[in-house]
Length: 415
Ligand code: EPZ
Image (cartoon, rainbow, N blue to C red; front, side, top):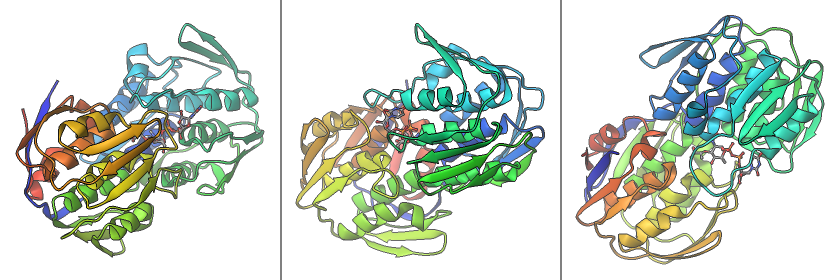
């Protein structure tokens, strides 16, 4: 297990380019499995989760070639229907391959997915929808054996606007017989990006980005070229890191609209934010607490930004109440922030952060991807040298993390 050594107290200043979005590229790689041609995906982020997705594609028989930031997938002869247990366990998004395997084959065999432990993460909404589309699913000791004699379009009303379930239904529906209407669909920008990719392949999709998505099945899908959207969560994390160190930076290659919920709270916290067409600048001298951060589905404040923003609020003047409405247990970073001198009280899905003047160095452990990123934000602002262990979690979602922080003048190295 690698560790990061971060010497805090250096303002992050300069310019960085933001990587392509992990949560876009993962379902897009799954969609490429259904193509009869060659798909090229640009702005591909080099992170461990995307490499797991490549391993899954290869295990299913696809040819995958990577050249710089472009990944090319040829899945014409990929007739595999079983994802090895080891790959399923490596990330939650391995479940995204279920919809596309079923669109391509009459059966699929997978195990329940792994991924960040954020409390219970059932896949009941995915499975109920696929069953409605005509899939017979047998659950045996943590394995799922799925089969069908033709996917059927239907009306699906989601009990919660689950991002993954919306994507899995879209993947299965593009080649189903008839029209599938998804009500209470997730509206995240990554859903729209997946729809754009599928439409380029020849799919018929309307309404992506709204809570009603309508998909008319087609018989075949061709190859295409697509550039994935910028990673809004990574952008938000770097903004928090710059603010926490009282720095001044320009983040390029982002879509400002996608991070509006974060930039508006940063403004409220006293940061000077300037919005450009595809960039955002931030400058922070003084930081004050915002009273309430409630995580919500898009366009609300993203749960994935809760930990980095909490690290920031832990050194702001005043109190912030965090309410986590999406995941059952997404405050694992709190115990680690306490070791660094933060004042936080947690009960269930609510945390009260009382800002302190300074955090101090400590030895802490990344407990999940965004929690780990939150600890890095705290360490960059803290007095002294902090060691963060289990940083593999951070590499699941952040490309060239040490390089980007160093480019901005942060003192960070892998040990
Ligand atoms: C996606 O996860 C993202 N992952 C997550 O990003 C993100 O935190 C989450 O959406 C919410 O925005 C990817 O896109 C790859 P959900 P997903 O289904 O699809 C419950 C990161 O840090 N639920 O919208 O798994 C579930 O337990 C990651 O990049 C069910 O109960 O999220 C959770 O409480 C982590 N049954 C809530 O819904 C289901 O069948 C939201 O989950 C499905 C979900």
